[in-house]
Structure formats: C-alpha cells, structure tokens
Amino acid sequence: MSVEVERKFICNAETLKTLEEIGAVCLGQRQFHDQYFDNPQFDLTLRDMWLRKRKGCWELKCPTVAVGGTEAMSGEQSKAAALCTRYKEITSLHDIQLRVTEVIKDVCEDGDTEAASSHQDESWLGKINLVCFAEFTTVRRSFTLEEEGVQIDLDQADFGYHVGEVEVLVPEGGDVQAALEKIERTARRLGLTGEQQRVEGKMDVYLKRNHPEHYAKLLSVHIL
Ligand code: V4E
Image 1 (tube, rainbow, N blue to C red):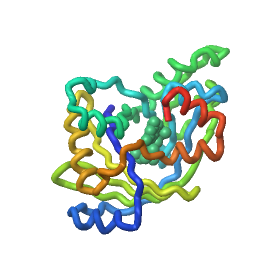
Image 2 (image 1 turned 120 degrees about the vertical axis):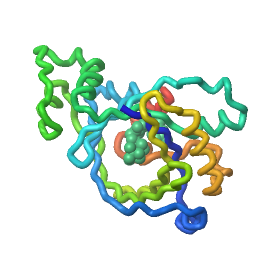
Image 3 (image 1 turned 180 degrees about the vertical axis):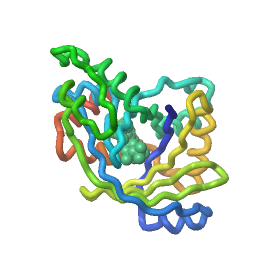
Image 4 (image 1 turned 135 degrees about the vertical axis):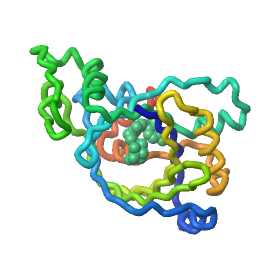
C-alpha cells in the first residue's frame, strides 16, 4: 500500500514548453480505460472510496488520515497543502474486497462474501451490488523531474477534459510532508503560483455531466 499525494493543475498551450524549460523528462504516452464501481446508493464514493478497474487490475483509493496535520506548517505551506489530495492506493484484490465489504456488508443478503480468485473474476461485484457508474478513456503523457522524484501527467479524457497533475507516491509510513514540499517546488517551477483554488479532476467533470445529483451530494459533503 502507498499514499498518492497529488495536485491537479490547468494545462494550457505553454505547459509543454514549460516542462521542457524546467528539464522535465518525457516518460511517454499511454492510453487506459477506467471503470469506476459503486452500489446504487453510492455507499463507497460517499465515503470518498473510489473503486476502479484499469488495464485489467482493480485499484481502490481511500482517504488517508493526515499524519502530522497542518498545525506545524506555515500559512503558505498549509495553503499549498490544501491544493493537494492524499489517498491510500490499495492494489491487492484481497485487501480491496475486505475494505469494500466492510462498507457494503448489509446488502449481501445470503452472507456469501466469497472472494474473487483473480482480477478477471467479476462475480464478487454482483454479490454486493456493485455496478459501473463511470467509464472513460484517458490519453496520458507523463514526465518526471528526476531531481525531485515527482511525476507530472497531462491527461486528455475522451469526454473532452484536459487536466494536469503533479504526483508523488509515498510508501507506507513515508514522509508525506516531504512529498507536499516536492509538489510545491514543482508547482512553482511550472508557474502555478496564481492557482489558489482546487482544480477539477476528470471525475468532477464526468459526474457533473452524467450524475449531477450525485455530484451535488459529493460537493455538499466536501468529497469533491
Ligand atoms: C475522484 C477521486 C478519485 C478517483 C481517481 O481520480 P483521479 O486521481 O483524478 O484519477 P486519475 O486518473 O488521475 O488517477 P491516477 O492515475 O492518478 O491514479 S480518488 C479521489 N477522488 C476525489 C478527488 C478529489 N476530492 N479532489 C481531486 C482534485 N481529485 C479527486
């Protein structure tokens, strides 16, 4: 398990040029199709848990309890930290099923919570009433600033939304504060100093268009 710390940013015509100027190394381009799952009551996403299948593998993103909080930060640091998200990334199918069934145990009437044996076996979804509520394809160009250990992704979603993100993966028990500082330095080098507001991710835009009521609910409980 690792913690993904990331900050989204708005891409513009200058972004590629800026990446080149600051010495970012291109890691290449890839395309992937994401399917996101929840039950009809949206019990997972209302707990800020995001279950998806990407390239044949299951992934679950869950909120992480902030270690060290923001009290030790300066005003500027905590403002910068507020623009970042941190999520635990779980990729073990066994652990994903445990976490998901903890939340959705009441709808499993026959008590049959038999685990799936492989990432391809989707029978467990039906048993706990999980259905796909969002799916889209992303073309992603990735860059790294090797000296910082950050990855910068430029995403183009197939429903017409373009967004960038600066990301650091922190191993379990690692230094989240150091990751926030790397992201902040990178944001400055990218010239993102004017961005004071959280930038919408692909899911914000997708839900706004396709599930506006659920989007409004997530906004009202400050999940989006
Ligand atoms: C919506 C959401 C999550 C699902 C994944 O969203 P995101 O990280 O934007 O997708 P992607 O394709 O960039 O994933 P990656 O390849 O980096 O793993 S996880 C958390 N949320 C909620 C959320 C939020 N509250 N605020 C922002 C700015 N983004 C997402």
